[in-house]
Length: 132
Image 1 (spheres, rainbow, N blue to C red):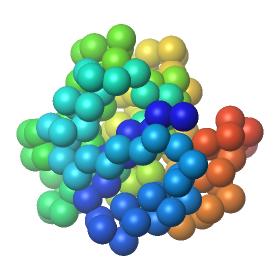
Image 2 (tube, rainbow, N blue to C red):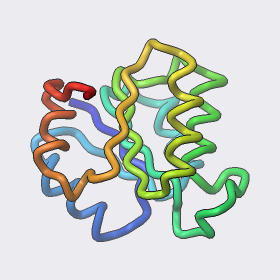
Image 3 (cartoon, rainbow, N blue to C red):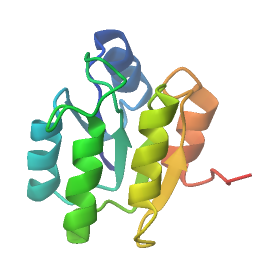
């Protein structure tokens, strides 16, 4: 599976690497790099964080996961089959989910516990996750 992850926290990056070692994984730590990655390869799953080491109360243009969600809203042809919003920022995650769910071509999952919740991570990757 091809998995793109937007995550700037080194500890969480390492957890993703360990848990997804059997897959082709690319981790971007900036929205700009994640957007570039989306245009180069067809990804199966996108894990999307909101806060990238910034003030988590604002959407600084080009510097949060919301920028990636805006790109995907504008260019849905680049949307992966599954998008997981794993941000711990509830307000930021909600904005991203609302924007991403406008187009139903992708399954959008809210997984704030990922990568810490290893069972949830495995269910998402294996396609066995069910929304409750």
